[in-house]
Length: 385
Image (tube, rainbow, N blue to C red; front, side):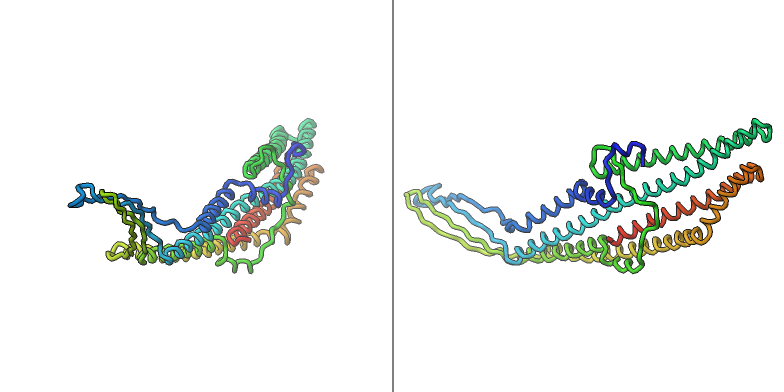
């Protein structure tokens, strides 16, 4: 955490997830799409515009403008059309729900990854502080020995350079931490510095049994709703071929002042059906495409999950090495390198070799643990956990 953390807004990972789900524009857009469909679901089906007309006809007795007819006519949608259109709106709503769930897990993943990276940086900083202390002591010893004529300028310069490198790495971590905090603030929509309350860097929990959720994951759910929408649209196209009725009233006015009321009824029947059949066939093909896209997406998820599980095995294997002996080896290398160099029992070359070996063991562990945790986050996001 940065030195200015006291002046910043402290926020935990759970609070950050809650805040991003409440305020992020992507979630607001997803909620807006659902609200649009809710309006359409509650609204009556839109009718065709009402026809209002005025006809003028000649009459042999009354002249060229002898008869005027004023009237209105309305076409009524068939019940099948009404039902299928409502089904389309309802399916669009479910699709938008699935889309919101996808957006939700993508945002959760971004927050989790940021907190995981910050936790990793904190642990790496602690390790670098230990190295800094080791190299600072070595630099002091080398400088004293150089003044005493016990070593050359090269050794004294190399130890000072190693100490400077540790300070540079610590400074780099501070910059990375500040950048992550800035990104987190932007993600949460907070217009002030953010001080994440970061948990200790440790192995994330994961159960292989959870991988059975793949077929009900947010991505799979979205694909299924796409199939449902395509099916609903197919039924809506079929409904357009159903007969629909119209009715109207009119008044006929004669030039001699006579007025005669009337009415009309009719039915619309798609006698020329080739174009309608083509639209229905095209919609049915859309259902087939949606099914194929769902199966393709599920296959891609299965393959991606297989790669991620393989990565977990690799990371866990490396972590087991560290836990079974690597940790003790690194600790002993650090201890003996510093102590033996201070006592003059080893030279700078041997000291540097032992320290670098210990550093490699510790850094490999940190990188593998970080990779494991990030992989688990990716899997959890894929499965919707």
